[in-house]
Image 1: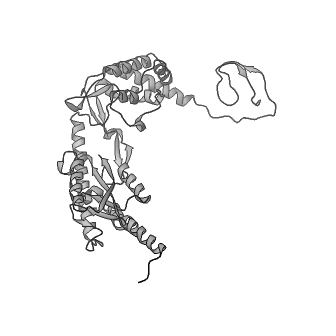
Image 2: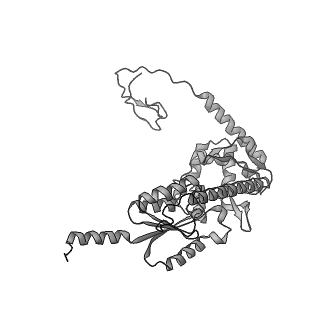
Image 3: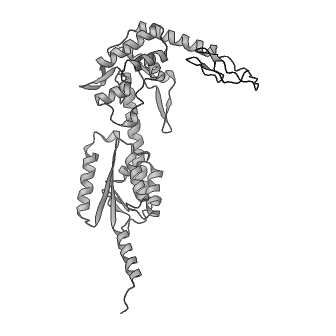
Length: 366
């Protein structure tokens, strides 16, 4: 009997290493499933753990979780991280509780099962459906998987319609349905749809409206807030523990846009204006004013309607003056002569920028 060469022995060892099942456990919980115990994150993990007890040859590389993520698209952090680990060669098996956890979009879900995983030799297991691409009977799923994906997608669409209908009714009933409250308000502890005043931020809002009614511009108000060391809305909510992710925090400085949004918001008069955006082709777009849902006196006001109306008038006048005050750019003729004379504060520097202190003008004379 001929002996195997070292190269042949090494090749067999590599094949055995590649054949080892390094599994990614993927669990997903969408918003519509939060009240269903049978699909909770813990339940999904428990079902998969019990399955793995029967197959000790499968080792778990990592668990990927998307909590509160819809199944109708695959732009989910946990899922995308799993794909990165697949591409890096860390994972060669994906295990889910059932097909709906992978996704509820027929075309995309079918793509990952029938093409993406297969091309990369990724074993795919859906425990509840007893589906395993390593099994001969499931290697070519034929019409079964597409049918199941269609059912899952239809379910997601139906649930989505019901949720939107519930949200529209809640808005009409004067219930706040946003994830985060407007600056100046908190959610009541016993009712997440009821706004109550945040005593710290409410004082700041009142000060902003008072300054605006006295004629202070957006930039002036932003400067005053920064000089006073007042926390911006996002950093204020971070201090309260309402925001934990760094990506949701701004620079920490008040901006004119933030000031403008607050001064334009009717919520501070005690009214709820919701439905100002809508989803079209999975994108958030602005809704027309007639589509908004406005309910009066739903919560305690921070400012009066009279003060709000007065500030709106001032803002509108300022915007109108700025719009009509813009002159068309004039054609400039440059010569080669240079100026080295000092210029006064706020004089033109030749580049279109105002100088705040006397300096030397080195611009081309026009």
